[in-house]
Image (cartoon, rainbow, N blue to C red; front, side, top):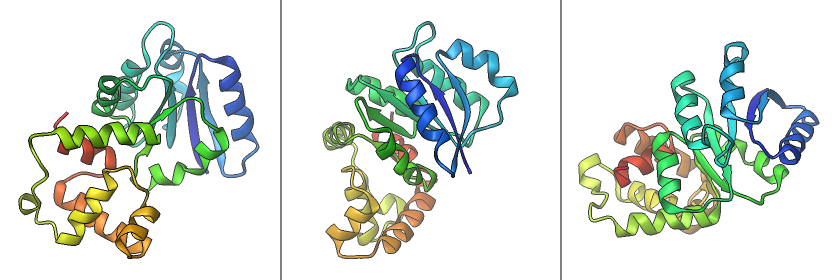
Length: 209
């Protein structure tokens, strides 16, 4: 059972989340709040969820501050930002604070929840526009990812390059002509060598943000 928290002030969107999640056999709502303040009031009675969707444009305490609060309270929870804000600085700031994903509105809830396994397996859930912005930022960095510093094999370096373009495991497999299982094995080695656990942590380490 996957437990999900929601922090969103748009009542209609929040209710749609609640309705859809409640109809799924493998998901359960851990909490649903309209602000960070309401979340902080309830947190003592909430068990750590697997995933939290959080809006940025909240009344009172902004959503990006909420990411910090969540990270201070729970270590293992995956945090996904849902917002209409595609500002590069905001995206990087959210990743720096510990967000595992950044999804731009509008989106289809069913498609979003269908990708939960990406996050639970250590990936980062990113809208294509967000992935492109991150990749452009990586390209502009003066400090490049030196494979010798981490002992990457040539294939591991190729997998990292494609991952940072925003490609999924399946897409990387197709580009490199290998299986998705092999891609996953390479990434496990990459994460171990870099001392990270998720794609978001890998990005922060490369971008030095």
